[in-house]
Amino acid sequence: MTEYHVLPAQHLIGAVRIAHPTPPKFVTMESPALEIMTDLRHSHVAEIDPHATMESANEYMMQRGVRSLFVLNDDHLLQGVITASDILGEKPLRFIQEHRMKRSEILVSDIMTPLDYLEVIPFKEVLRAKVGDVIASLCDAGRQHTLVMEGDIDGAPTICGVFSLTQIEKQLGIAIPLPGVAKTFAAIEATLIH
Image (cartoon, rainbow, N blue to C red; front, side, top):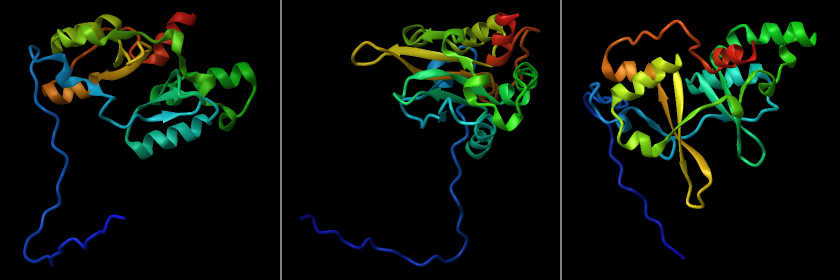
């Protein structure tokens, strides 16, 4: 059996600071796209069950400080994405009118953007892309986010990253206006349905 030892400790004196997260790395349009991708292989993924209520999803997003959640089934397979825009936008109102139910009864699966409406960029494309290429892709699609996919060790498709326009703006230090088209997963789905 391993023997454990007490770690040496010391008393605090004088001025003591608290560490803060390192600010996002500043990039340019020519920087490698990998520098702006949230790598899900090194970050904890914000996920939720499709049977959770919409209100609990909203609370969880606020607690985590995120604006979107991956919706995973019991087998941990991606079913869709739910965003703050899905919850705070028109989707819940339309769902209430169409199904005659209370807001508190709406489930994540009722208003999420389902898997077959999501698009991804292959990771091999990201490896040779620049920040400007990602911005051009987001602007062309009129989206705030896009997913990155690669095959896992068995070759199964796996979401490994996310590009967020908000994160890119922070790292570039400028605002990036999108054309007047759908900007969220919710808006894309609404456009496709109508």
